[in-house]
Amino acid sequence: MDIASAAGKTLGKEEFLRLFTNQLKYQDPLKPMDSTEFTAQLAQFSSLEQLFNISNGLEQMLSFQGSMNNGMTVGFIGRTVVAQDGVTGRVIGVEFDQNVATLVLEGGQKYPIGQISQIFETTI
Image 1 (cartoon, rainbow, N blue to C red):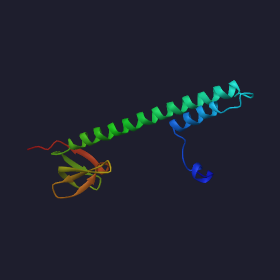
Image 2 (image 1 turned 135 degrees about the vertical axis):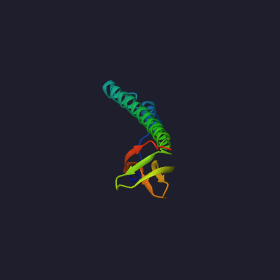
Image 3 (image 1 turned 90 degrees about the vertical axis):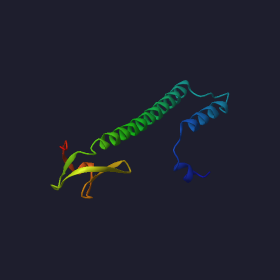
């Protein structure tokens, strides 16, 4: 692998650990790694692992939030809404495209949830 292609890749947790253990394994026995440098690299590894854990947690939280938002949006079916352009109508369906909910009104109009300004109970 050349330097240009290696520079474009990010160093993952496993690669960092492999590089670190190889560095320890093949170090010059007459000039071992400085303990300060060793401690700094261990701290870097610990920080890297914590960042991976935080990233995974955030991804799970965002996925959960998207599911919750989709579930809440379905609750608009049967309600009357007013769009920002003044159009009023009863919601008969919800479409999802790339985590963007679009309300479908009785007249066939479609409005992304962000363009809805009011929501009312529909009286029968």
